[in-house]
Length: 448
Ligand SMILES: Cc1cc2nc3c(=O)[nH]c(=O)nc-3n(C[C@H](O)[C@H](O)[C@H](O)COP(=O)(O)OP(=O)(O)OC[C@H]3O[C@@H](n4cnc5c(N)ncnc54)[C@H](O)[C@@H]3O)c2cc1C
Image (cartoon, rainbow, N blue to C red; front, side, top):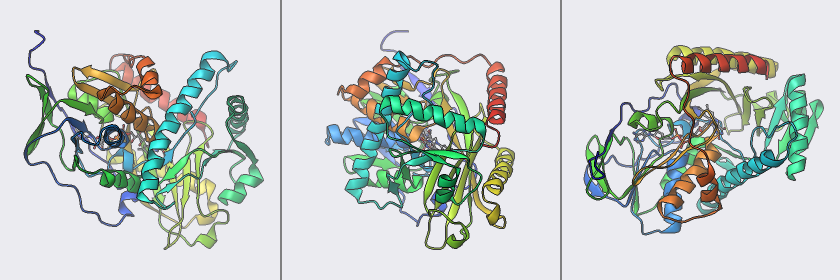
């Protein structure tokens, strides 16, 4: 094919969300941004208004506020995975384990910390500028909580590794963590101060609404195709089109729906449930805290204070769906698991029911690297969140913006050094392997 041959990429599918996210349901109504109608021009089109796409648009405007960005969101801002997660913007890697914990392991961890902190830096600048309260954006840190001997041991090892890295942390025994959570099931915990806790839908909406001319955000406007022109690209939407020089693909697993990273993205979904409001006096401890599990496949829990009462969030279970859609049955099974996890942690709240349940998508690569970089001339990917997209996708959005504008930084250097995502085994082995692996790791995480 000649260098000037037309290149056409058509979306084979668009995102579909399962369940109702409490974070969206709890927010007041908001005026949506318009759909795109007719033909317009932009310098850069960003596809996807999650952490990656919004951060890319924000970073472009920081580097050069005259650049015209059109940001396309297939659905409603805040209703995708970025607005339906557990709200931990984490600065530290989940696991820093290696046997000797020297050399590469140490420098990989330092890079992961740099990435997390760069993301938090951008998010904090927006929060300060917008004057958000701690209900939306709270730099309060997080607890890693254990419920088994294995979890306890893991936290002790993790604490030793953080000490070597010079990272602040504090180990808590069972009594100390129960004073925070009011739950007696936790056997130990590790507090790290650098994580920011957000109301994810409020954060995502807030970032979208903070973007100013010449950035235009279009909601309910999926990119359904894009094709090369003599110069630049033409992006098509159901009722319009945009001529542009460059494209940033920030639609995570749906990069594959345009034919990119085929067989390199594992479409993993995770689930959350949130209780109805309860009288805060029924649960001792702090009214606000956020805990991730000591073992990676375990359960995240948050207590969220509110004027009408407090709520508990339970996030647990991972499933693999090659077609990127979760059925109601999977949501129901995850919900039953959440009820059990809630019951064992908060036996005093046995009469409190879950009011909301939902699922959300993640895209994981075999070698845990982002699906990042220039994938066609003038088309850049900031995808493959690897599960902790609040920080990683934010950072890849920043790095993609810098790459597009030729602005090199320590972050772009780190992203330049990442390997490409490795090919997954062919189907049906990927499906069988992923399902077996998730089931095994969930079993290993046990009560956590
Ligand atoms: C229940 C749950 C809890 C989680 N908890 C955490 C957590 O606490 N911390 C954390 O770091 N991560 C967490 N995650 C993972 C995190 O949500 C993701 O890693 C993150 O959302 C990825 O960000 P992203 O911008 O890459 O992709 P997304 O958030 O998926 O954003 C991509 C956007 O692209 C849009 N899109 C797709 N195709 C098109 C198209 N053709 N045209 C236009 N738009 C399109 C989608 O609608 C979507 O809004 C959780 C996930 C879930 C589901």
